[in-house]
Length: 339
Image (cartoon, rainbow, N blue to C red; front, side, top):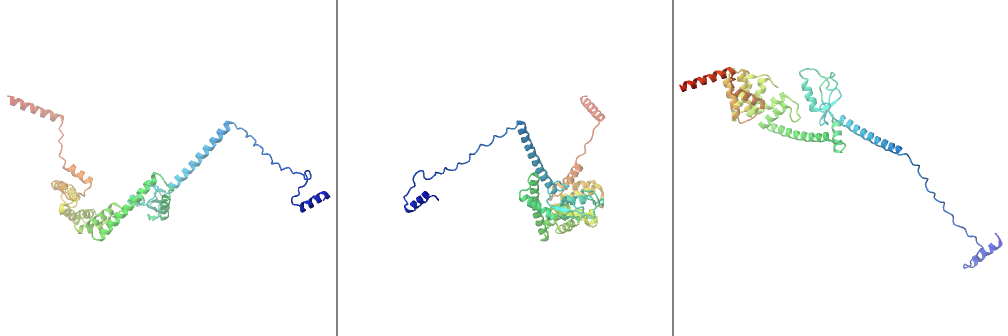
């Protein structure tokens, strides 16, 4: 270190107020900040290229939208019955490996009973059996997807309405079953009809219908007697017993105000001479006329139409020649009166 600098340093250490003479210390200039340059101007693109880019972006958005819609449609299609084309309410799997709506599958099976051919609704190929296995996993998956809002649209609204209807039917069926077990005659009759028609999710069964209708008839339920007699005379769900069936129907026609349905059966039997009843249109007329004042209005519209047709007054068709003869007779009579 030079001697002058050492001395200055010594002086500074001895006297805090010491200041070095001007010019002895070099001033250090502050570092200059690097100049920030302006971004280079973007190169202008032709408007045709911009328009092409915008069009390409829109096309990509449309493709993505269509792909999303197609995926949703495919998803719904997997949840839709191939027979009803509606979202599954009660999915069941058949021997062909396909899933169908339970009631549609049952109806399909009934339609093939007379052919004695077990074929798939989808492939039309033979199947080993008509066993229907509930597809619980699919049913739960649909319920969870709808609850989460993953499925929407009119078909989902229809699905929700279908669930409400199923719940109401299940409630009604339970009430009938409880009533029948308790010995309620009206419940026995209604449960028998439900089995006949396949209502409330029941599989159509004449045997089950006869079981409940017989109980109703034995408790003097008028419509139950008429329906039980009807099953007997046709041998539906039981052995053919025409005489016994006609007896129940005859009693139902007149007991406790009478059954409209029973009167219609008796009238038809007399008109056709069927069920061991002699043909007698006078008796048929009486029973048809009795339908109007029966207490239990349990006949269907078809039976009422037959009654109206039978009781309709006969209309005489007059030909043109008959009109001339009648006109001539009238003129002759008038001329003779004047004479």
